[in-house]
Amino acid sequence: MTEENTGSCNCGTVRFRTRGTLREVIACHCSQCRKQTGLYYAATNIADSELQLEGAENVTWYRSSPDARRGFYRTCGSALFWKRDGDDYSSIMAGVFDEPTNLSIGYHIFCADKGDFYEITDDRPKFAQSRI
Image (tube, rainbow, N blue to C red):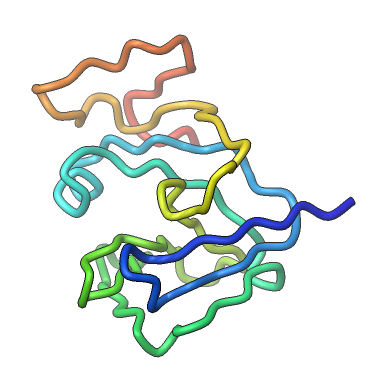
């Protein structure tokens, strides 16, 4: 049975549907993620072939590093996607999915760069940098 999930930006202009299994959520605590969201990114991913996007023309892409970009909707401010150049899948922020998501955090990355105003207190694996 194929899993199907839906979601949107805060105002609903950008909507998406996924068909397929979503990866566990990765919580990224790097400074770029914190500066974009105010806390940390919590993202799953899906093959591009299993992602249907409505309102794609409203997504603004920001080149955040030499090999990746971040997609957001500039009108309502919703952070939506992270995409590494050449990958055939897209990361989607877990918070933009409609509930129930059935998602859970698998592990934390860039913990050495996390903000000084919070602690990571769950029992999930924690990596100082990237897991890769």
